[in-house]
Image 1: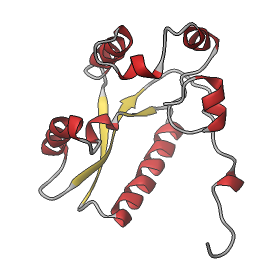
Image 2: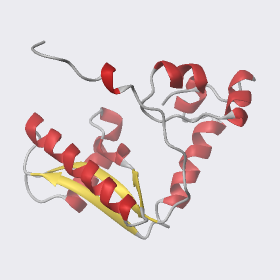
Image 3: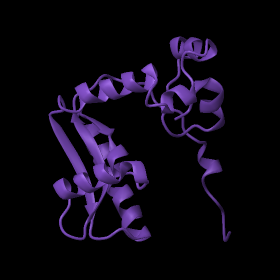
Image 4: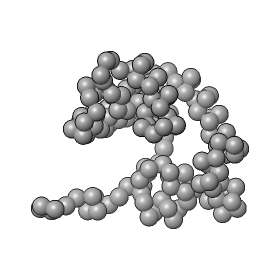
Length: 155
């Protein structure tokens, strides 16, 4: 997550909650990275409540699974996810990733196991999970310039 214009411009990837209203809250110290990460904070609880209402109201989900979890399978899953995103967009739908439950760190172990029980066959790995439906038009998000992501010749 990138907090504020300065962070968004320095690293134009990830989640970018920006705009004048959020910038003002950040400058006032109402929204901080520490508060967003603190389960006891109002900001954290508000974020959880947004998802508790949003997720059950979702009409459809998409999951990308692979037979294993090797690097080649992960890259192939990423390519499938991008093709899915392009196709849903072309059809006037929205695809919103909600892969938090798939994260591989101890606090998410129970959610990850449950997601795999629900969405994957024996030995499979759920690589991506997303909500499908109709959503509002959103502005393009910041991206790294192409020349900063490509190399010419051997590394």
